Length: 246
Image 1: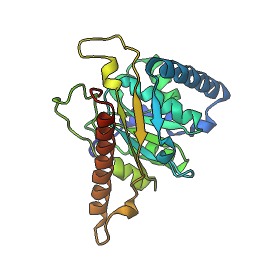
Image 2: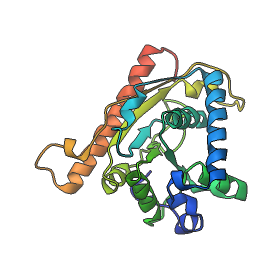
Image 3: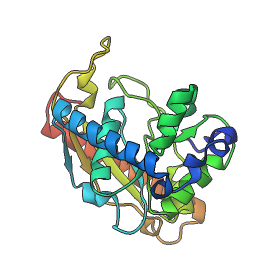
């Protein structure tokens, strides 16, 4: 999520799901959500035989966390969200509003707890929705790379702003990384292949971890840089452990 990125207010204000605790969704909504999560957990586990190391590091057991992760495939969202759901967590992914154009998609993404982002606008609706979710103990999932990175040669524009969300919600940042998901849909192919994939979480990063003497903005930037450093460090370690996989 970029620092100058926010949600088009109409997306959030027109749907109460975006700024309403997931535990307070209607009984029908919660039943549908639980059923879909269970099905997707089983499907993703069979398809990609994923392993999630140190997932308990993604939160402190009390507060919500801003989870950041490298992005190689849409598929990786399934095991991240469903595994944390199975742990009793509720994750609200930040997603591009381009995916939110049709009624059925808007309904599905809202039910899943997602918060749509309209890049390039300056609206506080998304920040506030994320802030309130964190304060309720829900997690926010953000992919700082902004788009799927399909090759190591692909230019990457990292999007900041997630440290500000964490600061507003008084929440830690939880870096994690995935490996292997890029390979399940090779360039030029559309059909996903069953392949083993890996995920790993790192230690939380908090605003108070910044060196003393820094001004507020400097501390926020330090936290953001440190969280990104840890995210890529985990990614690189996974690649070393699983040669040839991305």
